[in-house]
Length: 291
Ligand SMILES: [Zn+2]
Image (spheres, rainbow, N blue to C red):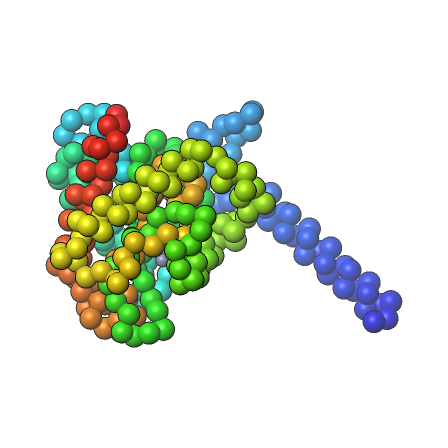
């Protein structure tokens, strides 16, 4: 390598580093280009500008005031479509939003818990923003909805994932790292402090409560919803680690499978799982005696 090439390479590396630093320092703008709303994230004299989506989350009231809040998180959105359906007609982000709407409507109608949605339209949110919403509204439970996809066209059924530092299978680990990427460059950061976070007892408790909820949801779903052979899996999901509440990631089924897709594209097809989730959420929040 001659000196000129070295200089050019050095310059390119420096430029890249500079632009990366500038990108990180630039406050994030909301997707719709609207004004940045300054949220409550005021710590140590530092005000963090939050995207509008994070600042404006409507909480739907329960029949009795002061009930605990569940945040329903429709996976993906905006420029991150998630998995594509086998028909080529639907994407994961559309189905997660439809299902989240139905789950939120049902919970509101039953009136036992307060409920909010991390997104109500086709907007892009990073995994950290989703978790920030859960913290900001004081959610006691975080439920992220997704649709699975696999190279094996016969794979079908729902899976319930809870957070763990050790994955339950290689597939779960691969799946978690795919979801963690999710078009969000910031989501893979923070691993430097992973060990210190994992030693936190609060997180241990959060993991145990999440695993309990996943197990109870699987029991509730048995015979009512098509489940995978090992329906409770655990892995290191970034989106489940950060909300500071017990959290569940639901893979409603495989949109890479013809039969699952046909079910998941209709309200009637989604309804059994929506009801199971509503009942599991209510039982979990009632069981934890939250206010
Ligand atoms: Zn997903």
